Image (cartoon, rainbow, N blue to C red):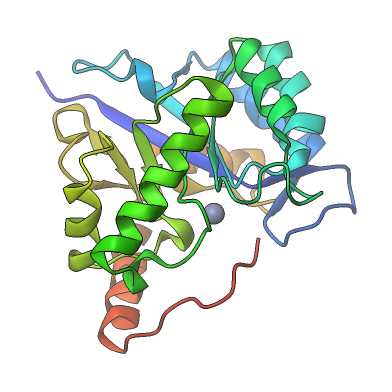
Length: 248
Ligand SMILES: [Zn+2]
């Protein structure tokens, strides 16, 4: 029997038309259309804590980078309406400290609804390729300590800020022994038997995607783009181009 594959999609902000803080945002109506599509087409949305081998049929992880406040304000009610589960990667230094991000009460309310799970995204949201072994351990432990303290939850998935990594930073990350799943930002889907062994692909959904294009992305028609995205990452690693400022 062929292996089932897991699809992970990600968003940042979910906004009212014409509004929003970051450049990576999707309008509420489009987001709703997409959640409806998942629900009507039999996709099974999961938390990272529910991943298993074998995966259920049509398994998909819906996720949000950075814990922006609009996920609480706008995405939450839509996901309740369609019964879609969401996973949010929180850069813990920003949560409750910046008005564009959720505070811990919002994060708790999302988790208490039974429809959301929070996961790790470093503490400071910086380029992990610049970390020493000590930096890595500080970032990872601070993030886990805060998530445990605020949400009583131990994260097992780690989303790499900006999707930027190299071999060395992954080795340092693995040395911390904290996470079962490490998430990149390149197109593709992952076989159920490789969930713990590779940097997992994730497909970003854009405001420009029509519902047809969304469907095609979900079905894997754009997975070939992952190769180009990884070449771009390799080029930036060779030329040592690092991300210096956090831009949401
Ligand atoms: Zn991020």
